[in-house]
Length: 288
Image (cartoon, rainbow, N blue to C red):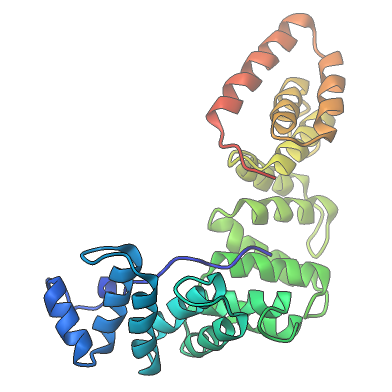
């Protein structure tokens, strides 16, 4: 389960009503009660764009818009209360505003509300409610909700344990490039949980995640190359991936790298060491 979504939304980006309008025009419309302009003026204060940066003023304008039913401002207020920006930190208020926006279909609010139910922050802890809101967001394509649903179904949290459903949601997130989902999908295929056991599919997903810097996938890919499962046996490739995983802090990879090294002749080991160093520099390093 990941952290809360934290991007603030600017309604003007998707509304033709204020395109081309200057700051004065936005303020005038906001003061006359136009909720979209109130939302945009709040973003301007939050970001310090055209006005002095002032989170309290941002909260003021978003509150006016939110009370008129603007989901964007409701979501932004949820973030402000969750993070204590411009207001005292208040999880109950955060959950209140997220709920209003979530009920209007805002995927980011649905995800954040799910997180709050999962953690019991501002609401009573309730994994079923977490799954409910993540499902709504996931069906809109929210990648983090898709991943978290995969975790919920894999572990039976808030739903009955269901390997097929875990595979389904992990796949959706993995196809959007989520490295953690790709790693977990590789584990599902390697272990045959909810799907037929398939090392080729495991290798495919671990390769994608490994190239994004996921240390667990880098190690697992090394194991496949070392054992010749799902890929041709290749001690040089095994050494490369074990080395990169070790550099990224995966402790078990050190011993595995040393075992692979013992199976390589000196010239091949030197090549593997050079390949590992070059690939490590090219790949992103993801904090564990």
